[in-house]
Image 1: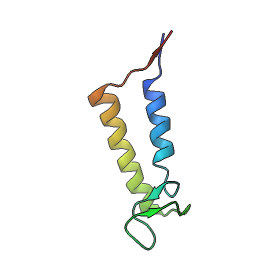
Image 2: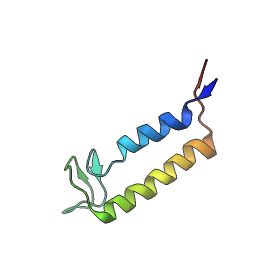
Image 3: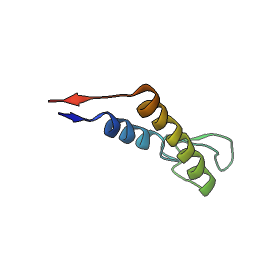
Image 4: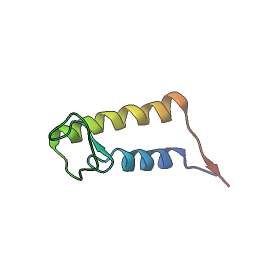
Length: 69
């Protein structure tokens, strides 16, 4: 019996928080830009901090588990 919760949460958050794919925080010209397909170093740092915070909340504080088998 495998626990797929951490894998699914990590993949979904990685796709949603890829800088420039859906949004970029901070943007090049504005604070938030949507779908510009560009990135910067500070944007990567901000998205990394957001990713770490959300994955910590979902996996440690809430304890999301998806069991198979």
